[in-house]
Amino acid sequence: MDLLTCCVVGTRPEAIKMAPVIMELRKECGVHPYVLATGQHAEMLRQSLSFFQILPDADLAIMKDRQSLDYITASVLSGVGEVLDKVRPDLVLVHGDTSTTFASALAAFYRRIPVGHVEAGLRSGNLYLPFPEEANRLLADRISTLLFAPTEWAKDNLLAEGYDAFKIWVTGNTVIDALLWGIERVKSPSLPELKQIPESDRILLLTAHRRESWGEPLYAICRALRQILAEESGLWAVIPVHKNPAVREIMAKELYGVSKVILCEPLDYPDFIWAMKRSTLILSDSGGIQEEATAIKKPVLVLREVTERPEALNNGTAILVGHDTEKIVEESLRLLRSNEAYEELVERSGYPFGTGDAAKKIVAAIKEAAQKGYLRDVLGGGIK
Ligand code: UD1
Ligand code: UDP
Image 1 (cartoon, protein in one colour):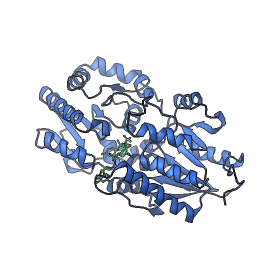
Image 2 (image 1 turned 90 degrees about the vertical axis):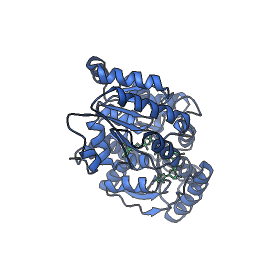
Image 3 (image 1 turned 120 degrees about the vertical axis):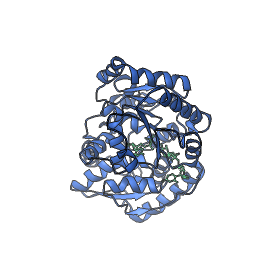
Image 4 (image 1 turned 90 degrees about the horizontal axis):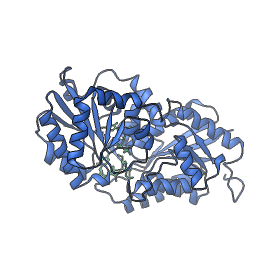
């Protein structure tokens, strides 16, 4: 077997969650990774890949300021298509639910190159929440040959939609592999502002970037944060601000200069892991952070109306709070002030997203699929 596997990454979470798969493909015989960066994110993608010592074989560098969904989708579709025509891989791996994910899967599908979808089967049940991610993941699943579901729940979603069971592998989430790999390499933070926080003080870590949070919801989150800080002494807020100007403008306006607020650039992964571990409470609208917080048993208030990761609510450390200032303040203070409430949340949580062997399972599944002939072109009987 000699499979060329094109791994596409476009944004920070794709880099972090695809990195363990790329590293595993490098280790294994008979499956070679070709890393294709779309560059939907620029600095944030490079930052994440470099921690895992991954240098893309090709980088389309498509990012421009305030890019539209049309622009990302069109440039990824044509850019990835050109690379696939040149490289002719046996399999294209995409991850998650971004525009890079969907458009790259489509480019492969148009060439009848089999697609493997890592983190398949997540569903919020609302096509518009999160937007456009719910649609991206549905569409990517639809045109994939191999579906790597992180949990049994994700697999059940796929089965309920009529996907063949033989196409689905339950693997755990690769973010846990990345997190465990990263934790071993984290000693102390590199950012001076993080070093200045007294050891006796507590940290609240906040991230927000989703489209649903832009505008008024983000103002509501900032108001909540100011109120929490005003009511709790010895509490710092660490806020690595996403590069998106729609987020930065509001965060800077609302939080710059507020006492005990550290507004910083996106943290590199080891510093972010340090911040998660050092924090008492996390507030976030991120997908990946719900999984990571659960794995390290840190309470995370999810700043969204719905989540496609119910395992984090049912068997993890997440609580859905939406964008309502009062609710965010109330839940935060409850957890910050009551040891009992805090411990209850931590104790009920398990390891729903796996224990760090997702990449191994994915690579084994790729080999199994190749041996069983699932990667053959359905129309032409061979893609090369
Ligand atoms: C994207 C994904 C979202 C994912 C998020 C992870 C889509 C539609 N959205 O959202 O699903 O949760 O990434 O973070 O696929 N920018 C920079 N430098 C960077 C990255 C972004 O300057 O390294 C700025 C640019 O002005 C860019 C803007 O942020 O135009 C938005 O980036 P984009 O990838 O379109 O959307 P995100 O909000 O990052
Ligand atoms: N992350 C990071 N630095 C930061 C913020 C987040 O390395 O400053 C990591 C985080 O640990 C997680 C991933 O980025 O693995 C989540 O990315 P993001 O929240 O941008 O996207 P989402 O998961 O919501 O799609």
